[in-house]
Image (cartoon, rainbow, N blue to C red; front, side, top):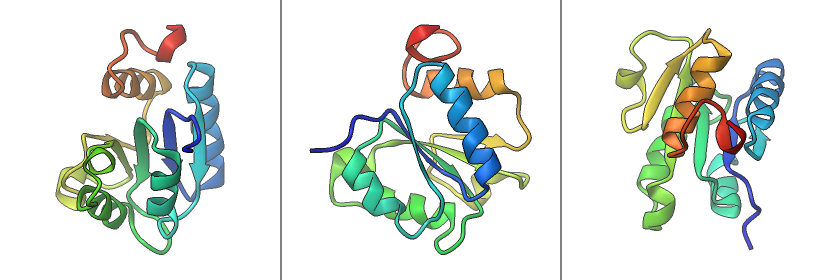
Length: 130
């Protein structure tokens, strides 16, 4: 049975992952972290998150490669999982086509919470507790 999480965060920078998990958890979402692209697709299948937040630059498989594999998955529900791509590069749409939204680092905490809320179809900035 899949674990009950709202967001799978795939970010290799531990400090950023901890900070984002704190921000999103405080807003009321259940977050699970993973730190590389290699195991991300297996973890996606195991956890069935409502949203994946992917860093574009990951060790092993890049965020763009993880996204491409996700979108090509034979499981239509899994392939349609919402994806927010984080990047430090300009024009992320060209680097990782197919994400539902893109957010360039650095970004404001409110910007992240608002975007995640929209992607999850929730009103207000910050999950179920907003």
